[in-house]
Image 1 (spheres, helix red, strand yellow):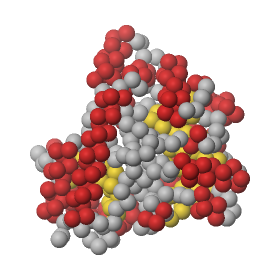
Image 2 (cartoon, rainbow, N blue to C red):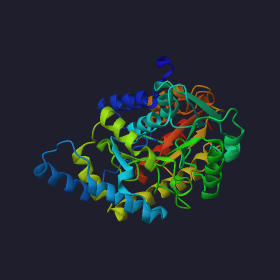
Image 3 (cartoon, rainbow, N blue to C red):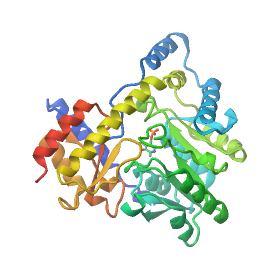
Length: 374
Ligand SMILES: Cc1ncc(COP(=O)(O)O)c(C=O)c1O
């Protein structure tokens, strides 16, 4: 079973990128979904003060849970008791926790292919079985209620991701409602990864908790809040799972970093600065969607959210890892191979993160333009 857990290949690209940078090469980092802007200034000020004033013991911030409940009331219009939030070291352990409390070994978990590399691999690491549904351009690389209804036998669970990694596509409110209805009827537990919420370029993202109060929601401070290395996320569980989730959290992970919890509380009040970053991403998105097709990269589902472009490079290669490695070595532009997200068709896709500055996007376009065959 364990052997089926595959490596996250963008990490290898990132390692090579860092090595090239130490050798003096100019590298543009578009391989990870990692905002190049640091966290807001106020976050850093609060963190500095916390180092001086807090002994950094094991701790869960009650204020942070209350503030998260207020966020859900403001953003989605749902009333959530703060006790339903569990604080974790990012969305990654939140996913492990969610799967562990909801399903036994052997459970079948549906997910879109392409999808975030960790979904199928974490499911396998926990001795569960991924049921990958091929999702092409016609469904904007997303799961639909219809596709979930057609799986026989019904899976035990499904992982929904909107906005999605690697495509950035969003599932609208009506479809989320339809998915919730199918899952209720068929007894499928929904895990909804909402880590890219607040990063959207049209309609705001809707949370699955609006449509299915029994859904388990995964999120974190890594993306919109620009705090990936602070390792802080959360799980929102329905009331009947709280006790079980507590037992698992305490035994598997204990508490997340105290420093990060102080800092995150401040981050939740920094919407102005964070939305200014989103405006930069929106400009980057528009620029890439204009320029990439002119370089021959025409098959792209325009991302509704997150900060990725997932582009079809099938006319250039059938080895996305080799393509990304050579692109990096030749030009210094680091990107992620589609094979991470889709073991079947990903050999002909690559992913660019545009959570970088507008200037860096221009440089990347210049280098790509000179490198891609016309
Ligand atoms: C869809 C998705 N979920 C979860 C994660 C993991 O995030 P975290 O840094 O909060 O562990 C990522 C990271 O890129 C992601 O893209």
